[in-house]
Length: 119
Image 1 (cartoon, rainbow, N blue to C red):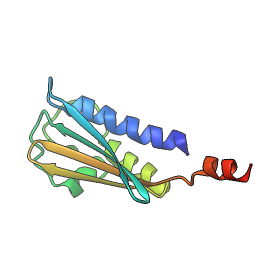
Image 2: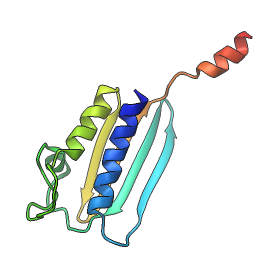
Image 3: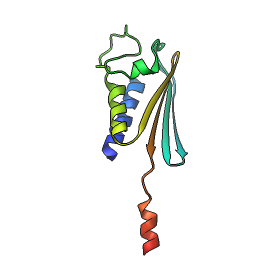
């Protein structure tokens, strides 16, 4: 399972680095949200995203239809599928050229503290 989480995050980071405005910053936050851990990724896109978040998540969609760069347009859809298979949630938010992706996944049970208590 850990490998799939890693693949999902690597896929998302790859897309961010590929399409973020050159020389801009990428912000990554990790938050303890009770029974979940939330990872959020924010960047400024090199192109204004003239498409809704729902449309951008669809297979074979790109943020800017006129882009001629390589890629299948599957990245976000695959990341979402991998995350959901592992009981997580993946959402994106778009506001002009601001792109934000949020991954939420359930916390793993703390088996180490149980082992210490039982010894």
